Amino acid sequence: MASRHRFSTFSRRNGRAHKSIAQHLGIIGSVAALVFSGSCSGQRPTDALMGGAGGMMMTPEFATLREAADAAGKYIGTAVDAEALRNEEKYPEILAREFNSVTPENATKWGPLAPDAESYDWEDADAIVEFAEEHSQAIKGHAFVWDQQTPSWLSSSMTEEELRTALKDHIQTTLERYRGKIGAWDVVNEAVDMDTESGYTESIFYDKLGPGYIEDAFRWAHEADPDVLLYYNEVAIERAGPKSDFTYELMRDLLDRGVPIDGIGFQSHVSTHRYPPLSNLRANIRRFADLGLRVNISELDARTVLMPGNQQERWSAQRIAFQQVVGACIVEPGCEGVTLWGFTDRYSWIADETEPDDPLIFDRNYQKKPAYEGTMDGLKGLLPVTLESVIENGDFSMGSDNWDSVGGTLAIAEATETNGPAACVSERAEETDGLLQEGLLSSMKQGGPFSFSAQVRLKGAESETTNAHLFVETEEGSTEEHSLATVPATSSEWTELAGYFGLGFEGTPTGIELLISGPPADVELCVRDVQLNPLTTRSAH
Ligand code: XIL
Image 1: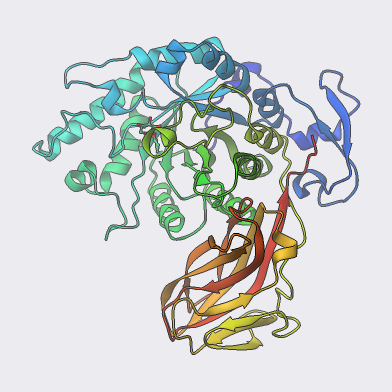
Image 2: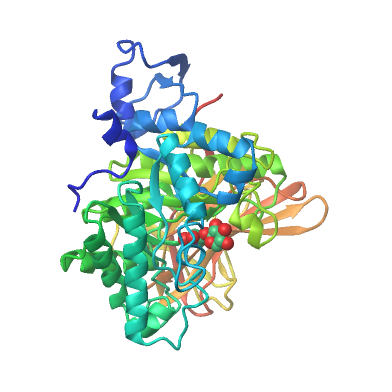
């Protein structure tokens, strides 16, 4: 499968091999066509660009996101809202200028395409396809099979055979119409649901056809157009963990059995205080790529309203979230590109469906937000810089210095199955009993963003939720509680408990402490390698 053509127009149209940013950097000064600002930064360059070496580096400047993506040989795409494209002035202007790839946000879903059982309404989809062709943008169609936005005429009274025929017909008719125009399709979307017994989403498709509908859909698509690239798309698998593992096994099984599947999209609807740690995301991209799949970030947006802090604080944390996710894709050879789920906060599904949020890179008036710069930095392959941890004695090399326990008994011991010490809290009387570090005020009072990580392991329980919180006492007399991270920990292995703290505080802090706790009473909680690192964007502009 991997030998089929890229869906992006840039490699096919230009007919030349694309250079990575690293290659460009290697030829600074000899290529007149590339404009470099000449700005130098003394900060540590990313390992991917400079092989981990320290010192000065030159950063290329690009006028638009798509220029930066082209230079990296990757794509930067966005979901497109057909209404906004039609009715707004700024929307098409920015869409054409900044993106080299598009995905219809709703127009190519089954429901919107097939308002009745006899006919199709191609108008919105056609408009987006025409626009993309006019502006040399690659197109990924989205999505043939999803449990949501299905046609209203699909009903549970249909027989298995009627449903199968309708689905096959829909996939093949749509592929036929856009043959040679849309180079890639999400064939199946969100078929995994870890809250069901089977692990599969309980949809009309699963209920009537069983999990076999997944491979059937890919085979029908391949039969109709063997040249088109076919993707599986899934929510909340960007972070390696149980859902990502389940999806990985599903992909491996499908590929083993010769199902024509070319790639996978990690949706990546993140929140600015919750996105995968860099090492986790990169390793996750790599393992799917190692199956022979193209990997992409397919629906990136980053909510901010779940965090406290003023807009400036939330938006600067958001900048780093975009930089990190986009940057991870750029520096990982197995990742082909990133699609944002929209680009202006004026049109975001998240703002639509819940309280108003601001998860995208342009504001409601089409002005660039800090997240635009974060995306640009990421496209240049610049990753956020992690500064030294503010936790004292986070590796417990000085025994229990600086640490305490809330409830229970704290002991430092050689960690199981790994080198170095761990701190274990036994005889815990409540869920909130755990490991405590006080005295974080001076290093944290300016606010974040910070990335948090620790390794956790239980004794006396199979799997229990473990979490990390900051408790902040304020001059105003309140105590703020901020969740840093949550993970199901087990007794069989060390698990990473990781997350973000993205901002400032509601009140003026007078005391800040970290507590790692969560499992039920009597479960012994062991912790090692605790880190809370300030993050900064690498570039100072
Ligand atoms: C969303 C659209 O953005 C909304 O406009 C629509 O009302 C609902 O669907 N995962 C997906 C996307 O795969 O298709 C969803 O898009 C967002 C979540």
